[in-house]
Length: 183
Ligand SMILES: Cc1cc2nc3c(=O)[nH]c(=O)nc-3n(C[C@H](O)[C@H](O)[C@H](O)COP(=O)(O)O)c2cc1C
Image (cartoon, rainbow, N blue to C red):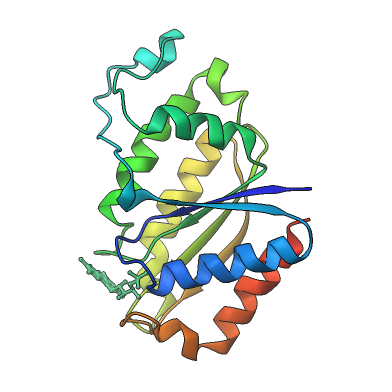
């Protein structure tokens, strides 16, 4: 049984990212996976100060919700990063979260996540896939650094308003397919 941790990086609940992540997790549950969604907007996650305390075998110097999330990440098999495109990158919420994942970038902590699978889920307004390229590059390079394997990317252009993605049957089906394939 795979444990899927979906990281919801849009501040907008019931929006396009949230819907795609829900479809993925629901499909995963149907085939026996365990799923959990983290709403970054509901959590207290401060910015990384670059103090590198975490690389010296200490806890993160920021005493916030990330300390529990590090454990959740280590206990998961598949990490699903969901964020809309905001100015050709991820949301501020997702960038803060990713910065704090520097915790896993030292040899000792990296053992906790090396080899895990990662999935990227990205809705956005413009109609060309090119729009998501800087964001995809950022995640591809960061995952490589963290020794995470990017196994699937779901890029959904042409969605703007909350729920627009429900009209994109192909995108919904892909989210279901991805969820089902994680067994
Ligand atoms: C601050 C902000 C910046 C955005 N920047 C872009 C952008 O650069 N390119 C784009 O295609 N869409 C952009 N969008 C639109 C969102 O990507 C789009 O509405 C997406 O579907 C929102 O996903 P959500 O419903 O999960 O929040 C932006 C939206 C906001 C609020």
